[in-house]
Amino acid sequence: MNVSLPAYYLSFRPINRKHPMKKFISLFLIFVISTSVILAQTKPHLNDIALSVHDLGKSTQFYKSILGLDIIPEPFHDGWHTWFAIGDSSQLHLIQNDGPIITPSKNTHLCFSVSSVASFS
Image 1 (cartoon, one colour):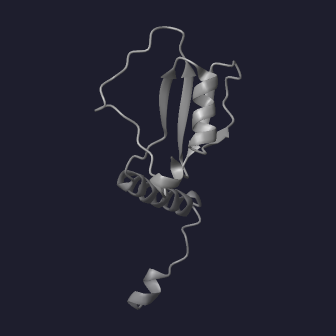
Image 2: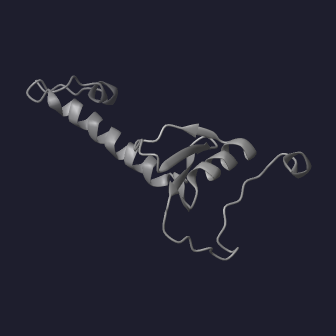
Image 3: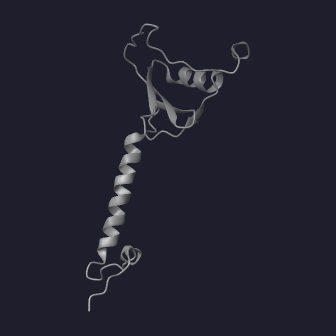
């Protein structure tokens, strides 16, 4: 006796019990592929900017007191680094440098926006 099953029944067949990992592997592959696509579409974002400074104490005081940046923990704890949070996901790293500091042209710069230049100065 030859029985024909409707198409909707075929689409809801139980998993083949001989290969219980089939569904897991399929779901895992879908996850990996979709995650890869999402990550591939994400643009790079700024992680940190490191500045070499001659006087770490004065530079730290400037960025903390004048600009109002918040100091965040740094992993070295060696007195040669100060890290600040910039926005939600970026950081400014100040690094003590006892060697000569080369002053770059103004074309190389770091710029912060403030709510009011008059109140800032």
